[in-house]
Amino acid sequence: MTGLPGRAGRPVDELDRIRREITEHPSNAWATDLGWEPLFAGSARARVLVIGQAPGRVAQEMGQPWSDVSGRLLRSWLGVTEAAFYDPDKFALLPMDFYFPGKGASGDLPPRPDVAPLWHPRILSALTEVRLTVLVGAYSQRYYLHGQKRQSVTETVRAAESFLPFFPLVHPSPLARGWRSRNPWFEQTTVPRLAQEVRRALSVEP
Image (cartoon, rainbow, N blue to C red; front, side, top):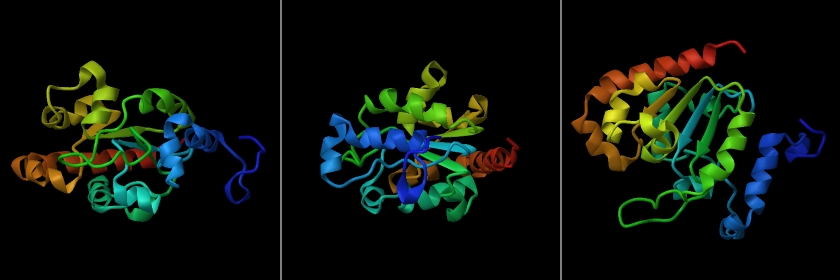
């Protein structure tokens, strides 16, 4: 950590520095012009990392990751309170794209493919205490599981335990409500195991 001035008088650490670089990067000028902040959160002490796809419009406008109906359901699956979820010493929240990508024909547009390769390695290198990484949705699973993932999100999520310390998860979007009703094993088996792994990760001593 350096002695450079940061937000509210805090020193600037590596995550602060990366956030500033993302904001100033030419590829993100359109978002900066809109007054948007790159939406990721956490500290070097975070124990659980949640990697999603990209912020929704509500989260982007509020300036807080997962501050929508999807976030409420995700927190219930993780088995944590809102206060714990937004405690940067417990959870780091990292999307595959830092900005709302816009609306498509069915749901939000996908995250830009060049964002994660450019920024994630540096962010992950600063998250030295992470014990569990929750991969929410197909984009993060495709990127982080590489050849390990199954043929579909359903098969990948069903085999979640085999990927630990990664834990693949279906996206908690209202658009996936039908998927959840067709796959009752998810809430019966996968969700309790996820909550167990979260408790274990948060209880590990440094």
